[in-house]
Image 1 (cartoon, helix red, strand yellow):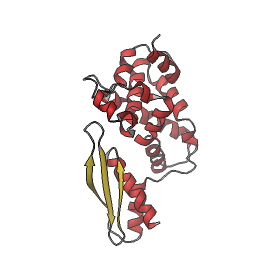
Image 2 (tube, rainbow, N blue to C red):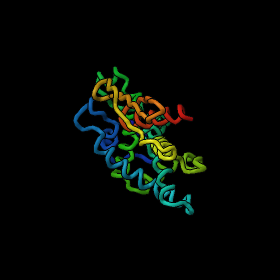
Image 3 (tube, one colour):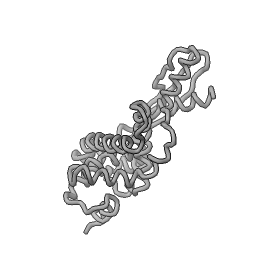
Image 4 (cartoon, rainbow, N blue to C red):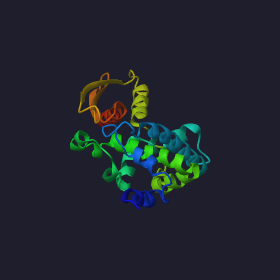
Length: 220
């Protein structure tokens, strides 16, 4: 059995039937045309379904809004990237030379997408039950550690502005850097009368979240 197949068996809890699916799930667009993006699209939906069902069972007394807050906190790119590092995904990424030199294997954006693409591959290879078992084992205590529904920083800042009779926060991309396969965004958020704050990320959404967190700390 190959090194990749051994790692997949340990990581997924079962031997892969169709190894090519997982090879594609680990392939970045800089390496070849058969890359992970379509599998990531599928895996994102599978992850959302499994975690939503899990939360529905775990918190029977919570309303839809509270469950949505928990779900959004558990399936972010940052959480998926943490999972990727815990599983050892970076060592198995298939990257083009320039992407390797640029350190794409360290990108939260890429690692998060690859975890979702692996879930997509597992779904096609062995079905929803296998995906649910993998996700529940891998996400583990993250579900139980959320003693209260978390509030997304952007939602928290929006509520703060409304409660203080301020206009809604205004977000603006002020800088984009890095190569196409590993971009970095800088976003500035402004609340009239309270100044601005900036945040960075590997996607606009991630940068906006970081900026909102920085503004909440500033007005704290």
